[in-house]
Length: 95
Image 1 (cartoon, rainbow, N blue to C red):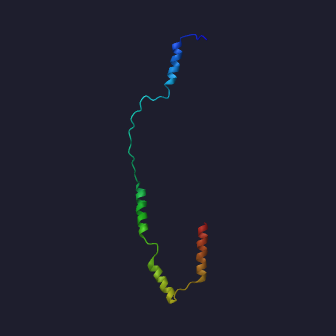
Image 2: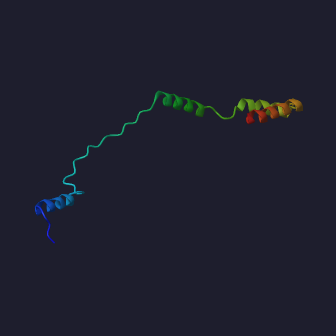
Image 3: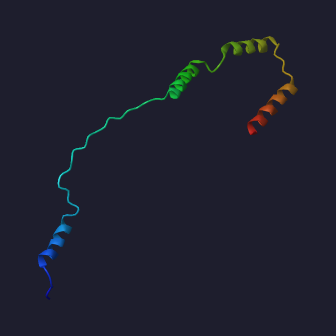
């Protein structure tokens, strides 16, 4: 088979395709340092959270007061008031 025209031009095209995908030299990569910044709102939140953690979960003075009332017989509960508070708590949670 005979190919008309200039053969070196045809082979030159194929040589250019062989060079695709090859990396001649990789350049150096400059590394960047990570920077962390905390907003003032986050700092305020952290301060409040520390303060809340220092507050005890149980107010022992109130507990002791109720124990003394119960032991002395002065702790009286109105059933109607207690039922009203229970129902109010239940309905407040649903809304």
